[in-house]
Image 1 (cartoon, rainbow, N blue to C red):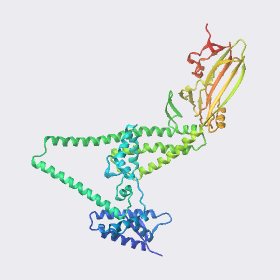
Image 2 (image 1 turned 180 degrees about the horizontal axis):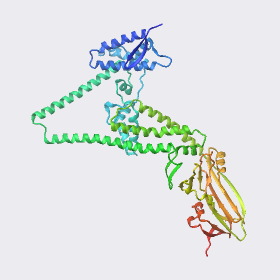
Image 3 (image 1 turned 45 degrees about the vertical axis):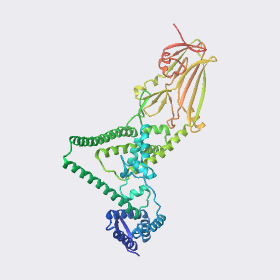
Image 4 (image 1 turned 90 degrees about the horizontal axis):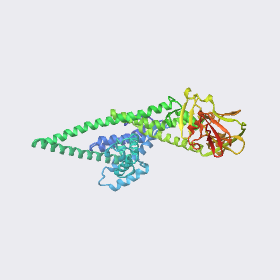
Length: 531
């Protein structure tokens, strides 16, 4: 039985056995002694401890909660001993061999970060360039091209800005460049940062000396003061503009998010339209209509929520951050991007499923013969029981192919098309041509056959229903109904005014002028009776 200790490395708690503790303690003491008198030594040590904590965290699991000496030895192999590069200038060859040996234990993999050191706006382009080891100029030019080619580049940039974390630590910067995160590279990176900081401080010092010399030699000129005032005004204007942009982004996000939530939770009718324009619709109803009742509609709606909701919520989140200058919350962007990609996969699956469900077209045709009343007029009328639907709050959608109605009990009804032609015999022919699409030829014919439509023929009157219906347990598959009535040549026909809405626009030049009149059937078609 071994003793175990509880230690804190870079803010993370670990349980470690006695041998591993002694080994790690000796290693850290050597590191501290090596960098104690170095420039930036404290920061180097902190970054080394952060990297050690990161490696040790990867070695823990539900079945393993205690760090062992083997784990510490692997950490040392990855990070390297300070003695291996204590005399770097004199022992370059040995250092390269040591680096090659360490890379056998640790193969670095790049991670996508925003590069704050070379950023122009958010560091997205420079981060992508670092990942692919190319000049950031090419990535910036690519975003600029997409800006003038439809503006998609702005949306992509905003999404990447939200999703990509910023390379804040030395470890992040090494991961961004794909370099091994060991002591040698950490020290090298921090020394480069200190050299860069020295250069900036020297530049500031030189500018301060120059400014002081100007003041001593006679002070700033009127134009210099005017220029400084202009710069200050621009700075204030820039901050106000950023806040204004944030407000606009929030307004856009809310104007899209609120209607989406209303459609999602049924705060709108099945379809809310104005003429042929769909203004809004109920997402659950449309899911049932397209996928069919009893299918995996819940999973589809969940995927749709993530697919549309995540970009809108992240747009809102970005606007709020810009307005109030809030710090970025870690992992929010990455998590949102991962969920959105998952939803994209599901939406692609459902899209392909619907396309497959509409692959084949089938039809079903039926013909019924009636005897033409002798020396009498045939009356074509609309079923009066269906004429009061608009007063009952039904939702109407006018399309190029006719009118679609959504009833109070959310049943979909479609207006058929009526054509009237001359018969080749002495009988009235009532021909129904039903069509639909489906996953297979048999499915499409079944959907077509199941179309619900009623009409009656009594004495000398043929009465039509205004709409055809679809079975409630069947999805919408583009069902259509074309009615052809063939009438013997020489017969007189009276068309009721309400029936004008069913007449085929492609066959009749002006169907809205045919109602309420008597017509005579000729070999070429209907001819108006003149008094």
